[in-house]
Image (tube, rainbow, N blue to C red; front, top):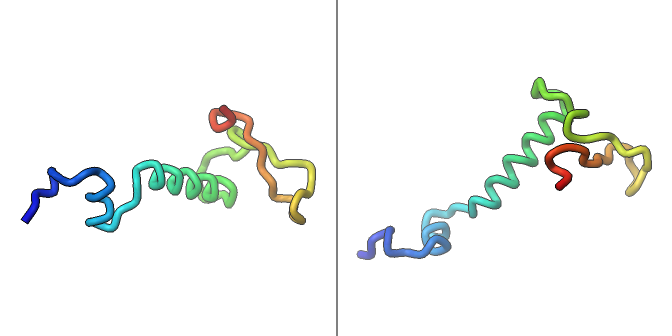
Length: 71
């Protein structure tokens, strides 16, 4: 039986059925944006985004970054 410490990062992720840290952080960020957009958090959406005035792709709920995310 091999020790889990001897496995590489990707092998450990695969063994335990986990995703990478980068993927988990992206998922968390997307969930937070969703919660801000839907009003589930007490964070002003306008602090980070502004609604686009164009109707690209057939709807008016397009966001443009304005703050820390717009690096």
